[in-house]
Image (cartoon, one colour):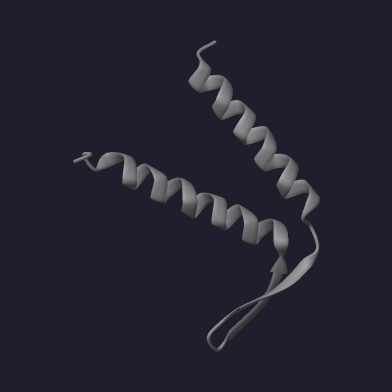
Length: 63
């Protein structure tokens, strides 16, 4: 296997371990919104946002 694939699989395993260990309910507050949800969902959404931002940043040419 290529090193890129191996590092991606290791990152996925670490992400799954983090998600499984964070299952308690937390209160997420943003300005006047107050939402109670599983911390697992919050972490998953943040991982997804970070992944998308990384893809966007990779598309721009380096100067």
